[in-house]
Each structure stands twice: as C-alpha cells, then as structure tokens.
Amino acid sequence: MKVLIADFLDETTVEAPILGDRATIEIARAACEEELGDRPVDADVIILYHDISRLSALTLNRAERCRGVVRAGVGFNNVDIETAGKLGIVVCNVPDYGTEEVADHSIMLLLALARKLSPCDRAIRAGGWDYRSALGAPRLRGKTIGIVGCGRIGAATALRAKALGLDVLIYDPKIPHGVEKALGVGRVHTLAELAERSLFVSVHCYLDQSTRHLIDAKFFEKLPHGAYLINTARGPIVDEKALLAALDSGKISGAGLDVVEIEPLANDRLRKHPNVLLTPHSAFYSVEGFIELRSKTAAEALRLIRGEDPLNAVNRDCLVDPRYRRGGR
Image 1 (tube, helix red, strand yellow):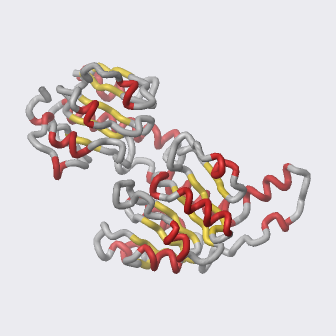
Image 2: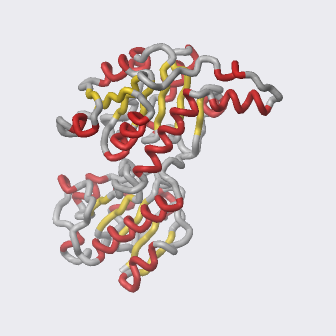
C-alpha cells in the first residue's frame, strides 16, 4: 500500500511510525496540482495540506486505486468532494486539532489591534516614547464581539473573549439551537444583526460557495464606526477590496488577518496598510498542535488502508460504493 503526501511536508518522522509496515510513504512536495504531473496517481491514500489550492477531477480521475483523500486540516475547500464521492473516494478532514492555537491566535490579534500594539512598537523603534501612540484604544469590558461560525474554534474563541469581559454574540445557521446557552453567550440569526451590534468581529466559518465573500461591503456598512475585523478562517470569506475600502474610510479601525484571498500574500496595499496586522497562515501552529495534526492525519489514512470506517468523512452524502470497503481497487 502507498500513501502520497501531496504537498507541504518534506519529511515523515511523525507519519512513518503510525503507518508502520502497512504502507510506504511518497512525498511529492507539489506547490500546485499541475506539479503532480499527468501520470496515474499510484497511491491508496492521498494526504493533502493547503499548498495545493485545488485537487480536482483532473487528478482524482487518475487516482484509480485511491481509497481516500485526507485533508490535513479543518477546511476541505481545496478538494473536489463531489467528484471524489462519485468515484468512490472518501474525503476526510481533521476537525479537532489546533482548536486552542487558532482561538488563542484570534484573541492575540484582537488584543494587539485594540491595544494599538503595532503603532506603539513602530513609534518606539523610531525613537519615540509617548502614550499617545495608543490613543483611541477602547476598553474591552462591555464591548461586543461577534463570532461568525461557532464550531469548535468559534466556541473556544467565544469562551476566551468572555474571560476578557467582552459580550459575545454568535452567528451560525448550521449549529443547533441551545448551543448559545451551553456557552453562555448571545445569538443572532442574521449576519446583518451581528454586524450592527459588534465592535469586534472574528471569523471562524468554513469556506464554501455560501461563505465566499460573506464579509463584504454591505457587512462593513452595518458595522459601528471604528470596528475591528479578525480572520483566522479562510481568506476568501472576506472581500479584500471591500475591506480595504472600509479601512481607508476609517469605517474599520483595524484588521487582523492570518489568511488572505491569495496566499502567499500578493496584495501590496494590504501588506503595507498601517492598520492591518498580518500573520502567515500560522494560527494553526504550535509544536504540539502540528504533531497532533500530523498524527491524526496519518491515523485516518491507516484506517482507510485497513478498510475501516474513517472518523471524519466529509463527503458521505455523495459517496458512492466506497473503495475503502471493497479493497480500493
């Protein structure tokens, strides 16, 4: 049996002990789908990170023995899950790693923006020492943060925000009623209401066609003047043109972005904007979190190799005659 790690990794110190003698591991180090070539994909399981922006029918149709694709991460928008399902290829993700790290990172960006960390740091490095570098910093207690998407990470962020004294509102049409009671937060049922009531907004939803540019010009118009946006989910959820317009007009006081529409960052205006804090899609990372991600990814691949049901299939609704149940060939 063979496991293909399509992108991102250049070593297998975590994966190899888990897969043991059940599979050989091949590392492709592809930066895009085209770099996988046009030959048949000779793998029983494909592990995919986020360097390859789309694993499409072009590759999936050439993967005749592939039982499953394991997306090493929470999001799976870079896999054509419908085509995979029709071919009998199960697509899985790892939804329960890095929750702590991403939630911590979101709060870090919020605090850095609110407490004017970047302008204070720049002023001191330029030779200054004046508290007025922090003018405009709001008190957090009693202000409202709107959480867009309240799954594992959104919920963890909500709990951290409560500890800072923020009033928390959540918007997520996909979660059951009553989740807000379990968390002890408020809930709204329209994105417009969340915008109208939130000084801070933190984005934690999946990226799909329903959430692409969910945060757009209309959303920014409804925010209170001087609001703040944090995005540690996926870049295309936020319309960057609308964001820049809101920043330039002062409608938004600041934005903290771990993700952008095109990665690596290609938007020079965003890169140089004085009211934007940027991190390089690193919110997921900690030493422990990265090991957890890789371990859970490899364990899911091993289940598919053994013909066992995966823990985190995301395309069951369109999965036809799963290959992992019939030997993968």
